[in-house]
Image 1 (cartoon, rainbow, N blue to C red):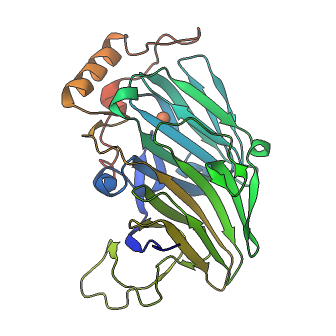
Image 2 (image 1 turned 180 degrees about the horizontal axis):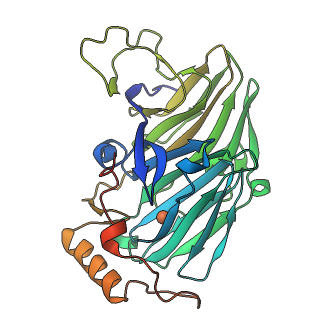
Length: 324
Ligand code: FE2
């Protein structure tokens, strides 16, 4: 590994009110998107209080993106305009390609303790595929293989390859990898990544060193202050670590086991026109989407099921950071 990636920027998740009144933590969104291409948003919804999440995400549209939901605790009930419906359970992933358009709802339900914990990542689609047919991948826990990362490291492979272990989600345009990595205290995990691809880690539990060298302080922090001399290099939960370019990452756990999501993808380098849950390349395309939503022609593909959904775009389609 000739060129280990350094840390470029570290973001702290910030409290955000989203959907019909869900209190969650946003790791990145509209403001940070230039640094995360092809990814648009990562939300961490984690609470033991049902009042924080039961309002859920009632009927709303998506176009031009993919949403990837990964549950750790509790469940999410969902239904959509294609007639699909079901429950995402702990350890499971829903990889939804909205493509030309889908209208759905996502309603978090806690477990018997009232606990809820999950992540939703938005991945952009390139201009050539924004209007592709919508599709779902329902990934149950037993479909996600676990790879041996060496030194006691375990890797759940949702998408991508670790050694000879390949994840169940394939044929995604941006060539993503989505890994859930658990590193024992004091152990190190190293892995190659294709140069030029965006790579980030989001800490779930424990603490770890993500920087290339122990003395490496050449990264930005957000939020951060220029007079904050106590800049740390050991990052814990609710921290998003964005790596600079290179061909590998090396991550070492602190004195407790470290768990993090490790995600990569091929940048698109295209203009981003973003209005709430619709992400296209131009303002004109956004206007068309909103017009179609309001006149009932938004959905291009159905399998029976709903022809329209009882919500208005004025209520739902606002910039994702508007409430933060
Ligand atoms: Fe959604």
